[in-house]
Length: 297
Image 1 (cartoon, rainbow, N blue to C red):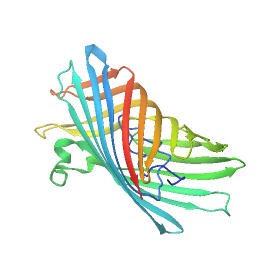
Image 2: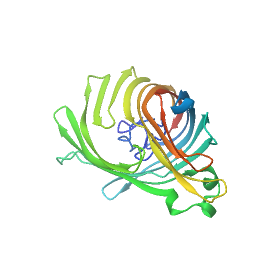
Image 3: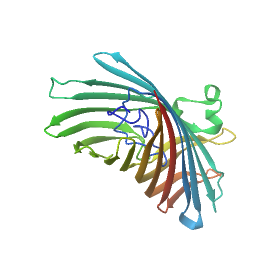
């Protein structure tokens, strides 16, 4: 597995989505060719006015490897995610939301420069409701598409590597530009601390085939939703922050299985009900359970 990143997509700059925190957005680059499928289950949680909200996420992601480009390497991938929110106690249909992203990540490393690496990511993304996504070429618009990105550098300093940069994405529930800053280092052969805000992570290697991890990150997002009769539209905004513990096993040669359990706080859903009346739901904190199967070449 590539030591520079476990996934080219994971929680991408633009994605980890409603509880989509599969991997820190800091780790985008991968030279692997891979295919991964996953599911995340968000059990029912209480919200304002006796309402309950539950969710489920299905995702398929693929990486196509890297090629030499402009003095570095360029990696390309694709990530499709289907998110469903179900409600009880409110006059709203359940929401089916789709996200399709194509990350383009360029990375250049140097052993002779003060900067050990420079990384630039651009991620064009479609984020919309089912009725638009199913016939996007006929029903889609520029409002369903957006571009996120990140620019970061790595500076070695003794046993630490410092990360400095900035990102623009929707992980906070709306479009936002924010800094990326922090350091990472290894402690012996088993511990790896990545104290890079806002995506800190601690990893522990249980031998050569198993890993444990504890990570935290924003897990919000925003989609454009169009009404059933196509007469109106609104934004579905989700804000949340997730802390996740995960276990990963290299099960057989190129196959890896990962199990995760996370807890989300600060959940806030903003959308419109069936009457197109604005709805704001403060949802109690709750668990998110995940399973992912990955094949890498």
